[in-house]
Image (cartoon, rainbow, N blue to C red):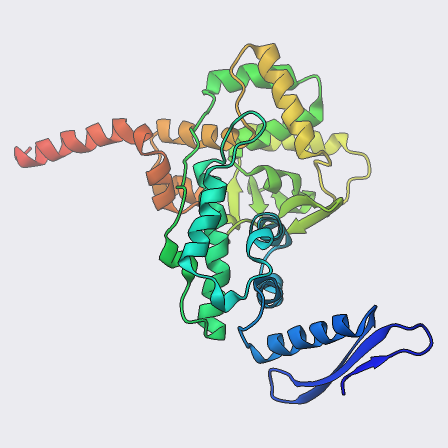
Amino acid sequence: MSVYKNKENGTWYVMTLYRDWTGAKKQKCKRGFNTRREALEWEHKFLQQCTGDLNMTFEAFVEIYTNDLRVRLKESTWQTKENIIENKIIPYFGKRKINEITAKDVIAWQNELLTYRDEKNNPYSKSYLKTLHNQLSAIFNHAVRFYELPFNPAARAGNMGSEERMQILFWTKEEYQKFAKEMMDKPVSYYAFQMLYWTGIREGELLALTPADFDFNRGTVDITKTYQRLNGADVITSPKTKKSKRTVQMPDFLCVEMQEYFNMQYGLKKDDRIFTITKSYLHREMDRGAQAAGIKRIRIHDLRHSHISLLIDMGFSAVAIADRVGHESIEITYRYAHMFTSQQKEMANQLNNINKGE
């Protein structure tokens, strides 16, 4: 017998044996159950998870999925996945046996999401629907690859939704300069937006910058980390992708401005964050500056698009731009293809000349 009653407080506990991933025999103790039935149910679920027996509930397998993957992902990435799993997937599939879920069940789940409307009668976006399905499919794929689930019912059901590319908005250099003029009354805002526009770095990369990242002799800034606010705490992590780690050459005037900004900071240490502001602060300042300058409001991330469009207009290649902003060159080509039209014409003209023997 592996379930026992604590005579002192009347609760039940489990003392069970299992084998870990190395095959070694281990003992597991779990206390605090109100009834013997609860203790037995917990033991049954625990032993199923230890043996990889998929005759378990979907939510029980999600615990295995979590234990396998969470340590491999950034906390922000995991929180996004966890939110989707807990709010959009577990409520529907949680109590069902994972090895009994069919493509028909997945289609029924999809149909519920497809017919959803909020208080303003708006449906979920196509890209959000695709994200939800991809997460469900990822859980089943994990069960197929590592725990011998025969097939992925989400893959059989087919995807829903589609990827939506957001419209790329940007400011021209003239529009940005009007905006920057309105920011000069608040130094922290002015210098933050100068870095965003003239280097094309991401918002999180900006907020993670420290004096140690700058080399004013070389005129460079190293992008090696990103800032996020998670669960009420400041969190510094590695950048978005491997390509994101890079050294960005700054124009001379920006080097001078950033040195001016450093000189304004009393007691600034080399590893201190130089912009101790929040993303919401930047968004409010974007509202204020755009309105005062009489220009269209764009998103903070659109300053990155603005930098890229400026470089394209200056004639730089997709490869060179990608190296600067931490993208893959194919992504630059794909997303900004319509901006390379002038170069396409020049290519065609030169091909004409070659064909004519000139």
